[in-house]
Length: 139
Image 1 (cartoon, helix red, strand yellow):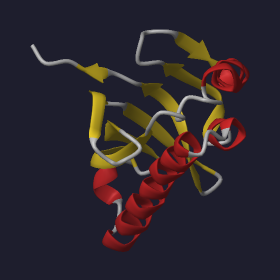
Image 2 (spheres, one colour):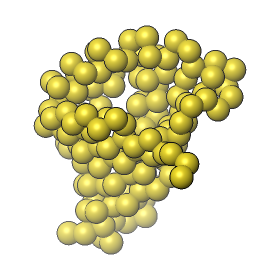
Image 3 (spheres, one colour):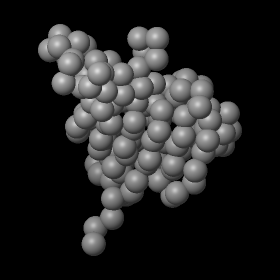
Image 4 (cartoon, helix red, strand yellow):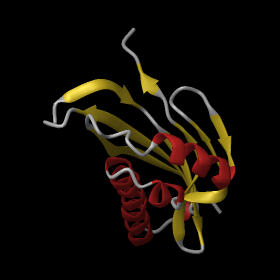
């Protein structure tokens, strides 16, 4: 079965559900909620941080997140916007996200990120499965 077999209604429902996962990533980051963030991942997920650290499984992701997320947004905030969704199969999607760091006043601050989230639909719920967070640098 391939993504071409997704009917329009299912497609729109899945796109919205994927957007909601990305919105939950934003919410958990903005509010420094490690448990909420970790709960978005599949138990055997892999995640590569913006600085190249590779984390395997929800336990490693949780340990790392509990160290870095509390206090991370004290000098600003971050937003996440879904830029593109490619359905690899009806239950697997590659999601390109735009990540922007902002000052407390909402002005751009620091770098822009370009995460790639491979998500899988598990028991009707979209979960982060294989993710790479990449900093965008001007060259």
